[in-house]
Length: 330
Image (cartoon, rainbow, N blue to C red):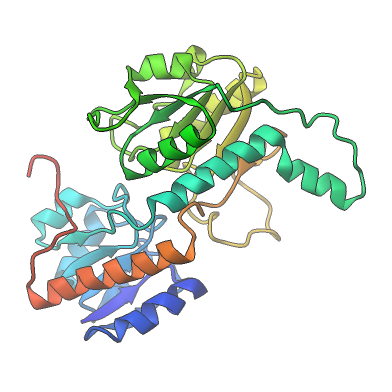
């Protein structure tokens, strides 16, 4: 099998190259993202492999079918960037990595919360200039506070364990409550209303898009902390900015953003930032934005490589496709 591997970074090669030798697989590493202008590069290959900020729409998938592409391999758990229905109709299986390291994402989410609460990112900058003034850096004890966890899948569960370790009370929302979890489930409105910290760990679906918007922000406590390591479109950015201007939030930690394409994973330090909303977010002293890196540990990247290549091998050998993504209703 020959794979066209889009959005390649140096760390991808470190793990994918050696593990590909365990299978009859050849990888063509492409630095360019997968989009309409670059889909033609997949001609002559058996599969495409894409990352979170690539996309495959209806027209692109039909082109892949015409090229004879046999599989779409996702280096992620999320699949909102692929037209799953069209891929199914074109008989091209879409295979994901359902779980690589829930702990990696949860630990990073906690790091964001600790940072925006205790201002360690700002303290680092200040003390680099030998300014040891701590004025403006007062945080709050997390012990005894209430954390609202939206989404209690594997990452949400890992986050709950961490939050409990800090002595926090947990309330949670999930459309499919887990009876084995020792947490109190409630409506999403009540979670927003009663939590001191809100952390998002749910996939992006039509139902979850913009679950944080003006109406739900209004429900939240004044001085709430908001953490998002899931998908940018869970939050309506313009409403978040308005809430920040109204001093609704004590701190916001964002590892994802709704307009990441062309910005995240790229060096734009010599460019003028054209995205005015992202530029505005970065002006708030109580907002920390990182570039979709919560997954980024050695263990997680290694697991992504192993599972992705195992998915490819299953396609070429006609084995059961354990990690296939099917459209709703199938």
